[in-house]
Structure formats: C-alpha cells, structure tokens
Amino acid sequence: MRKLVIAAWLLSSPAAADTLSWGWWDSTSGGNSVTLLNSMNLPLNTLLLFQGPSTVGDGFGYGQIDSILRLMPDGSIRFDSGFNDLVAPAINQTIRLYSSWQGVVTAGLSLTSPTFFEVSEQQFGGTFTLSEDIFVCAGIVMFCDNSIIGGGTHIGGAGLTGIGQINTTLTGIPPGQPFTINEVFMYTQLSPGDGGLPTNVGAGMGTDPIGVIPDPAPVPGPVVGGGLSGLFALLGLALASLRRRAWLHLTAAVPISSVGGLPGLIFAGGGLLGRWRRRQKSA
Image 1 (cartoon, rainbow, N blue to C red):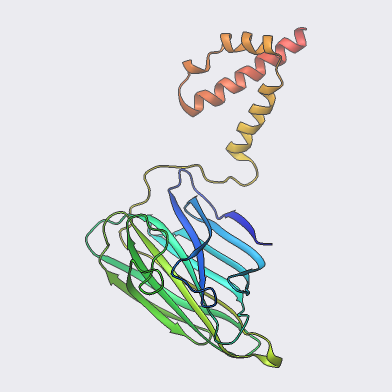
Image 2: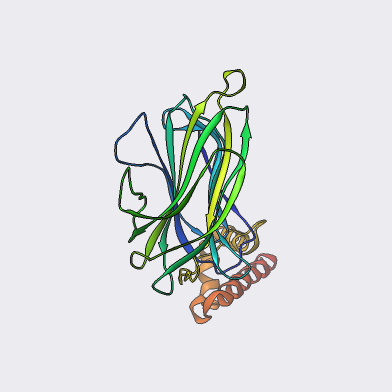
C-alpha cells in the first residue's frame, strides 16, 4: 500500500507555503485526464514523499516518488521532482508522471529558469526512453501539458535513454500571475532487461525560476524533536489536567488577553503552571 510521508529538511521559520501535487496517466487507461496521487500545501524545504514499493497506473511500480520547493543559498526557489526504481509492466507501455507547483508568482514579464534533467539510475539492462518536460499553466491549474490534457505551454525539455544529466536555461513568458509549473516525466520501456526483467530507472528534474516571489503568508514549519510545537503540546496537556475551579481562578488572576502575541502566550502558560503548582503545595 502506498504510504505518504512529509519530511522536513532544515526548515527556517516563518516559511512560505505553496501547493505541490502529483498525478499520473498511462497509455492503457488512456483518456484525457490525470489521476491525482495527492496534493498538499507545504512550506519551503519540505519533501512531499510517496514511499513504496507501490504501483501507479496499470502496474507501473516505483520505490519512491517525491518533490520539494528547495530554498537555494541565493534566495531563489528551485522546484525539484523525481523518482527511483520505476518499472514498466510491459514493453511499449507508457506512463506520464505529473509533478505540479501551484501558486507561482514572479516579478517581471519574462521567465528565465536554470534547469536540469537527469537519469540517475538504470538497473537490469534493457532499453527505455524518458522524456522530461516543463510546462506552465495559467492560474491555479493543477495539471497541464500540450497533448493529453492540454492547457499548458511547453518551455523546455529533454529526451534521455541512459544515465546522465543535461543542464540548460529555459525561457518563456508567464501566463499571468499566479501560475502553475508542471514537471512531466514520460517513460516507456522499449526492450526487456537481463533475464526478461524490467529495466529499473531513477530520474529527476529541477527548475529554478528567477524572480519568484515567495508566498507572503507565513506558516509554521515542522520542528524536529519538539521545540515550539512540543511546548504548546506540553502546555495543553498540563492545562487540561487542572480542576475547573482552579482553572477559573487562575485565568482570572492571569488574563491571557492582557499579554499580546506569542511571547504573551508562553508567559501566561508558564504563569498558570507556576500558580497551579503553588496552589497544590499549599493544599
């Protein structure tokens, strides 16, 4: 069964939030729609991870599928997508994997985006073809391309048949603000691998649009090992254990509303616990 994991990568706070989504289309099912795997609003530097082994489409297996909005040292935001251990159920059967970044806003009327396309893994021989392409779509559209579902403008791509990386700079025109970027992988196995095994492929791509304006609405990032989130949880558990009469007395003595903001909340919580401990001792 597919397992979805959200992993934090050295988050700073506050963190911008954007929407990342994954979907698939395969040649056996056909049609002109993309089946959604998942869509989540995530802070920067947070990995959207589908951990296998599992399958998508008509039996395409994978070990891992992931995407991330990575905050780069120069302050830019790179949209990375990839997978490993992808295998096809049959020769000449094609799958398209769609990775989407929704809510992109850029400063300026042109789009310049340093980009890489890569195959990082090939096991068990055999031959395959992998197309990696980047599309932009107007508005908050989840998925787009210029063939299966339409609605997208192609700004660049590469065809790969073995391990290697291509680095380039793509240019285009944003289709309005905000807009969506889709990174689309199209994979087909052309001949069987060693002993008839399917070829096992890992690949990725990343694009770094210059001038992206982060979402101005801050959201709290995950905190490893407790931190602020743990403090709030601890305060909540402690306060919930107070007797109703003591709670009413203490809240009257220390009105939280009189102390503003997050420091006030922490200060008030500490005051409540301290007064409750003293009251218990005197009792």
